[in-house]
Length: 101
Image (tube, rainbow, N blue to C red):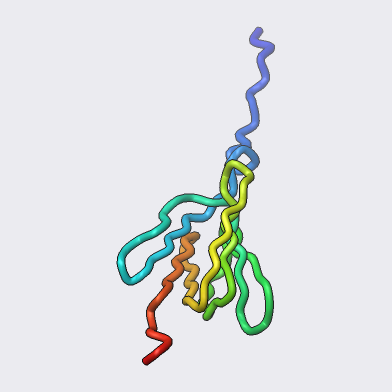
C-alpha cells in the first residue's frame, strides 16, 4: 500500500506577484523589467500599481518609485508623464510634450 499523500498544487501561493514595467522616453526605453509595484502621483494624490491591477490610465507627476523584486526601491523624479496599465503591464511614457512649446 502506498502511504504517500499527493501534494497539493499551490502554484498561486508560490507564484511571485509581479508586474512588467516599461518606461519609455523620446529617446527609447529606459526601463523594461518585472517589478513588485510602482508608486506615483496624479492630481488626486499618491497611488500604487500592483500585479493584476485593473486597466488604468493617468497623467502622472512628481516622481515614480519602482519597487524592485529584490526589495529595494528606485526613485525617479519626473515633471509629467502618462501611465497606462493593461494586461499586467505598466507602461510609462515620459517627455512626450515640450514644456516650452
